Image (cartoon, rainbow, N blue to C red; front, side, top):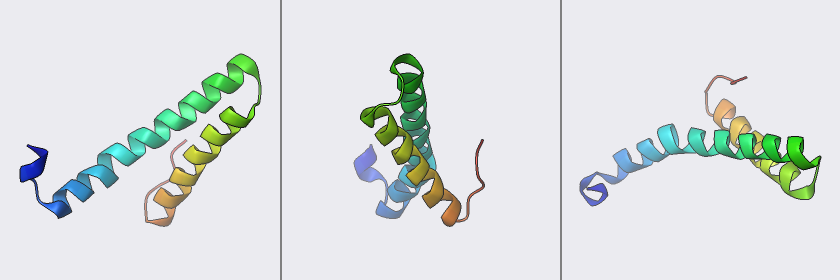
Length: 66
């Protein structure tokens, strides 16, 4: 089915649905890992990846989530 969607619509779906989900999952994983084992390189990397996605979303015209 994915094949029959236009390229523009597929990109829209990825940017509006999948990107925010991935950002949220990265941030939640980083917070859970940090809560469980304390700050580490992996938890810091996950949190930074979530923050980077959030900054990109805000820069492109979205509202900041809390």
